[in-house]
Length: 412
Image 1 (tube, helix red, strand yellow):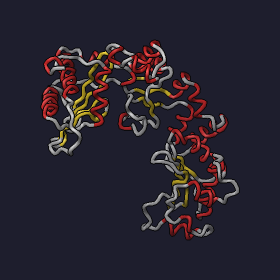
Image 2 (tube, rainbow, N blue to C red):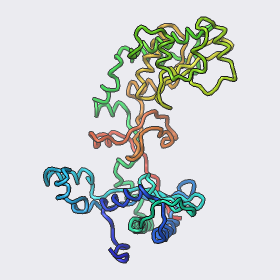
Image 3 (cartoon, one colour):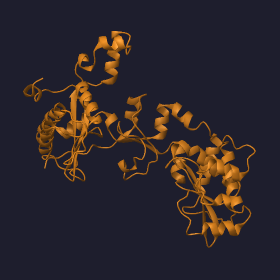
Image 4 (cartoon, rainbow, N blue to C red):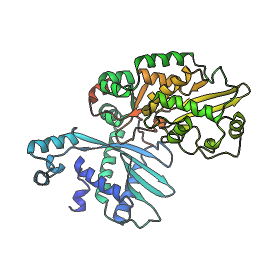
């Protein structure tokens, strides 16, 4: 294809996707032709107002679905065993490109002279004044397409049509929204069944009752002393309530050794019967770097912690574990401690109760965004769980959800 014709050609979505796939593997710009076109792209985008740090600019661009021949070669797919019939090939095409056009979020940033271009959150082009010697290949066709798409978007902005078009036509799978968990469960009841399979309705009711009575900062009652043995026994109550495998015939200390994080900061070496030994260890300011309170091992946000606290009134415990995957375990742990009259405070208790009864919101994040650690996308709301628009019953979820308005793009 000669460059004169290429500069006016609108790529189809499969063609654009092929170029994006290759560019993600080798985003660094080495050749001069791609470099010149990339700077031309950034020059065009100066007409767009920035929307963040490092001269961040964003635009939604589109590519038509194109013909099935642009998607793939039927004979090759048939020979390779990818499909078994023409009908199956057609279905595969329409499953991957179900809409007449595909939307892409184009993002550009400039940081210390490094020019970066992202499509759908993936780095596809980057110019660094000090190249790292990456494999060089011509990515000018991709940049040509981006320039054409940006020019089209700028014309639409000047006509006052761009933001309205995005608002009306951007697919829900690309949007930010939220849905009441109870509504989500009514659409996909198997999600509720899986979620609550290890807890009984009477346990949920008892938990909600207790949470309604819990003070806002710490328990009213206190223990006058704590020993390492008592702390291990508190852990035992939670472990046994959850029926963890492999703790049968184990002592509380052995259970803790098996199930806790492992970085106990010397807790396992204390005299289990000595309140003085625990007090000295607890107040030792030289102790640092461990995770003695991580009593149910997990990742950064998937563990369960049981903390000991001390003030002028005495000792109490705080339980923490609001990750959806461990929520039921946390609740059963809490119930076991309360039923044994131990002074325990549950962090995020009302939010956990809302999650357990389906009264909370699930944040819906765009496809391509991993649905965890997404709090920053919902700065004015407290949500603990997130998801992408599901494959099952997406239309029903779209109707039941609340959708946030898209950020308007403005010309400078």
